[in-house]
Image (cartoon, rainbow, N blue to C red; front, side, top):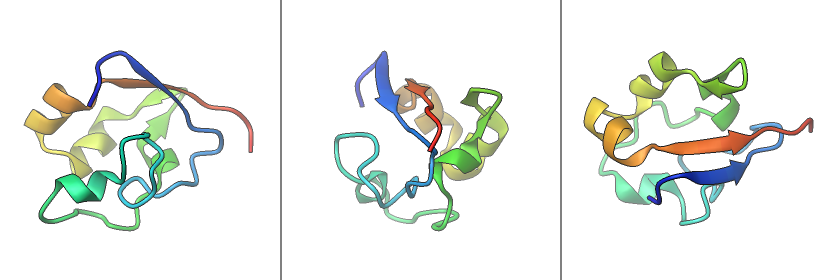
Length: 77
């Protein structure tokens, strides 16, 4: 994943794992096993930022630190 990438999320209804919301294909294609397969992007956000406690439920600590350096712009639905 690219560093300092900004993603337009809108209402966050995209599947975190299976939709191409990140722009480089579904994140599930990079994992052998997908934890919490029904999680939506918005489920991992809180107060206009990533809820790191929630992110750690779906990404390992190493993945979060090495790969998940994305900021976002949330727009109403």
